[in-house]
Image (tube, rainbow, N blue to C red):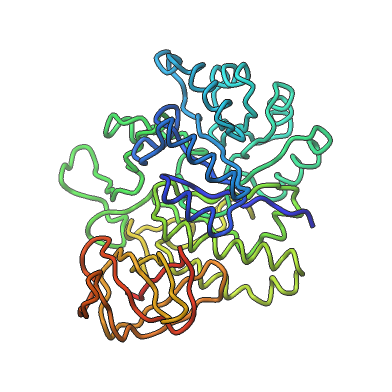
Length: 407
């Protein structure tokens, strides 16, 4: 079974660091232009160069998103931007627009075709390959059977196939949504999505203003567009058999903890599957438990096994399931005193049980018995934003291990 790439979101430099530390083979990130996540922190040119250098030193590839549906004004400075990306060593640029593709090609950049381009058949995939694309991110609306057909009919062309395997699902066709435009004048296809599909809605008859149809399970309205999150960690063997080369995790707007926790689960699953399919199946509950510990909606398998039914949406609310909170991150560890230096992210106190998510270990739980501030004074809790504290740990930890606690 060929090794598949694990591709992680990097909404800012900190998330890129966690992606590299927790097992990503590649990351995707956006600059300050041409991407579809305008509300993410994104990267200036100097930060992009720094990010590429940091990732490459750790044998991690960097793909830059430029998948905006380009209007005339978007082309100003585009050629210079792509020339900069090529010089900085970007491993690929992700595009969906033919005009943008043309400019990126002239800069000599490797090109991946975004899911926004809606590639749903082998003829489209082969056409992009003929134009010079190295990879296609397939539309999310494809089944495993359809992906297999595309793989079989394109495999001799050298084209790589990438699919989303985890994260939020968009109710629109491969993300090509107009709801945000109409309701908030924010163009989802130009990086400004207001996530209008997650709002609660009711149906009213025109001549009866204020009277709402009883189509909902609660009195506040129905979340008729609110999809469950995608999770395919149970089916990685089937995805590999379909001929996919890269597994993409959604979430540039998510927290570093989400990136770390999700990557931990998928990295372990892929590594175990590479050892033996029996080991992968035997440890499935471990992977599933880890994906339950980061913020998520209920999970589904999207379109991989056919068109989703009514049970793929959530009709009662748009909130996330949050069983754990990101309490802190390890900055240093002293083996002589068995103490860890922790940067606090959310309040934790003496007497609470915390769990350590480890990059290179199985993790463990312990009770916090004492907390010392940066002056060496005993304190009852770490409750200041990014407060630096020390505490003893029952087992050794490493820099970038994460401390979390159950909510």
